[in-house]
Image (tube, rainbow, N blue to C red; front, side, top):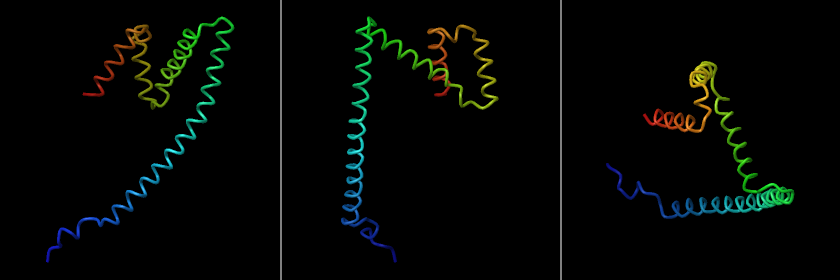
Length: 122
């Protein structure tokens, strides 16, 4: 004999229990996020103080921020090939050699990035 449709649905109590448990966890996540943000604020304030200190010594904040961002991006770019396996690394280095300076220039990097995105989407 076939089961009735009612037997295949969860009970109201099970649904309420599941929702309550998930909402409790969401509350815990929010508390952790708030604590994290509070700790980060202290660090961000120290960072801002360093920019102020640099400005007091004649270093323009806008330019200093740009230089720090550039250095961060260069470190990320340098790390791109860190996880390549040997054969991939060899091919990557070959591509870099054949591209020469083109791949190191902003226009070349943009073209390479666009080509990589197009190839990944294909």
